[in-house]
Image 1 (cartoon, rainbow, N blue to C red):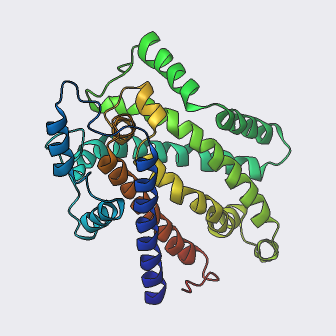
Image 2: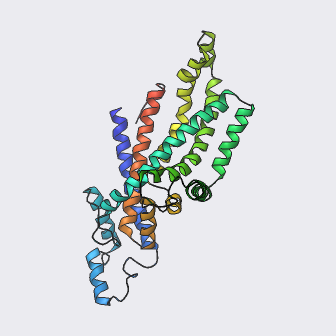
Amino acid sequence: MLRFLLSRLIQGLIVILAVITITFALSRMLPGGPIQSEKNTSPEAIAAQRAYLGLDKPWYVQLGMQIGHYARLDLPESFHFKGRGVDEIIASGFPVSGAVGLTALVIALALGVPLGALAALKPNTLEDRACMLAATCGICTPSMILGPVIALLLGLKLRWFNASGWYDPSDVVMPALTLGIIYSAQIARLTRGSLRETLAQEFIRTARAKGASESSVVFLHALKLACLPVLNFLGPAAAGLLTGSIVVESVFQLPGLGQFFIASAINRDMNLAIGISVFYATLIVGFNLLVDVLQAWLNPRIRLNA
């Protein structure tokens, strides 16, 4: 177990180093720079600002400076948001994205797992077809369409929530519902397929032959193993939900990480773009590690070998 954790930790550090390098290379390929957007600035002032930000140094020195910042856990200052460190910006945007993502994750699991289980337990019936039709509709509906429809219905028509903005705790409902419905559709299809496959295995027939009740067969034996593909899906999905959806945050005008990532691209803010990318990569590495441990706990046949 310790060897597995150390191996995954080293792999995670390599991934984060790759993310810094690739994001840095991509940001340098973009035309313009963080200072060119400033108006009425003399060439001397631009040169002084480039020297202050370290942009006058060779690319490999700038890359080394970026890696050094993250190795010391001392994130650099944003180019665009003057006087604010990248860690401060992430700390201000993550609570919004995290609240929406966590609520969406709960909604996705609460809808997806029961729908998938119901479809698997009643195959080729009206219930099965209705659940899979709903799941297919959820997968095929992009968030840029579902979000405005929910805002129009619950925000403008029924006036249950604010149509946009981040003013009170209830503002988490509509964006979380948008993301939760879309992710629940994928979870429902995964649960159905995995549970159907598990119910056909030999140990399930043995449990039934020994007189185990149908509920114990489903909930104590089959559903636990059927959740393994769902866990695999939830690892990167949870990281994506918690770091914010650019589309959903734009539709509902939320001040989350997605909005800051868009601002970093528009303003050529390399430090902020790298910082948010590293934060996202760190969450993915952490959630994947958590998923591996949970899988080994649910299925002892899985060994955590490095």
